[in-house]
Image (tube, rainbow, N blue to C red; front, side):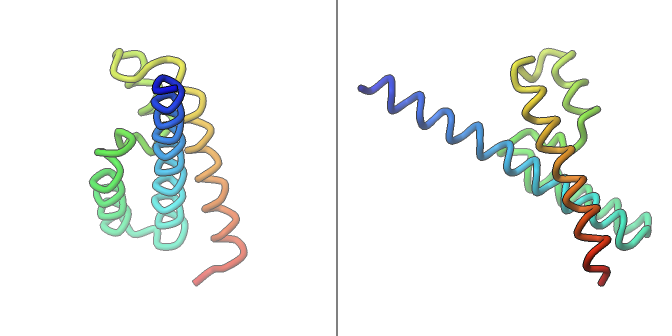
Length: 102
């Protein structure tokens, strides 16, 4: 019973980190599309990494995720879910930018 509860908590925490990567990538890429300003992009990247690093590692980019996995700092089994969350976050940012240009 205790093992099952721990396994459930572990899965919830993993899903939370994927969700954080999704929203972090969506925010960062939306700022890139919406402003194009290098200072705003740098500030958005710094803010995103600051907010997500404790939860999910703050990768935000599939290339960084793959590099961290090849360096041994991220299990290989988590590369695909992280990358999918980041890619879908980027695609969501693109759709938000296309539909609701502020």
